Length: 236
Image 1 (cartoon, rainbow, N blue to C red):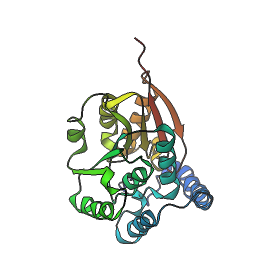
Image 2 (image 1 turned 45 degrees about the vertical axis):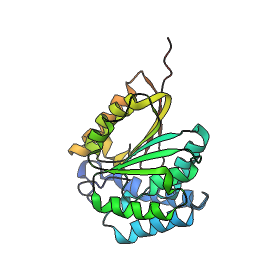
Image 3 (image 1 turned 90 degrees about the horizontal axis):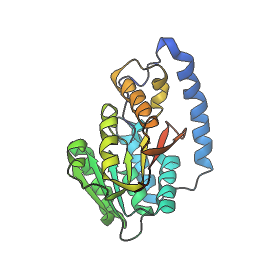
C-alpha cells in the first residue's frame, strides 16, 4: 500500500525536473516491467481493478510488479510468520499468502475499518485466505503486543510519519536473519528535497536504516522504492 502524499499532483518548484523525470520515465519503465512479469492470480487482478476504479487512492495499490516481487521473496526466504503493516484493499497480504506454505501465517494490520472490510471480503473468497489474520487498529500499538524474535518477515507500507517507529518494532519482533521490506522508500522522489512532514519522515527513516549496524540492507528502485533489510544473525 502506498500512502497518498499530501498533494500528489503538485510538483515542488525547486526540483520540478526530478519529479517530471520520475513521472515520465518511471511510468514507462513500470509498464514495460509489468508486461514482462508473470501475471498474478485472477483474484489479485480483481483487487487491482477494484482499487484502481473504486477507491480514491489508486496509487496505493501494490500492483503486479511489486506483488510478484513479494511472492518471490516469500518463496525464496521461506518465512512462516509474516507481519503486513498496512492492509488497504488486501493486495500485498493476499499476494504473500498465496506464496506461503499451508502452515504459513500472515498478520495484516490497518487502521481504517472500511478498507479492512473490503480486504476481508477478498480474503474470504481466496483459498489462501485462511492464512491471513486481519486486525484493525493503530499498527504501532498492535506491534507492541507481538513477542520478540518470532516473526520471519515484515512488510511496512502504511503512514509514513511512523515508519521509523515501525522499523524499531519490526527489528524487535524479527528473528535473526529475518527480513523487512519497506515500501515507498523513494516517496515520489520527495526524499531528495523534503518539504513536508511525510517526506522528511521518509528521508530520516532511510538514513536511520542506512546507519543501523544490526542490518544488512539493499535499496531497490522498484516502483516507488523498496528498502530490503535483513536483520543480522547475532554472534555469541
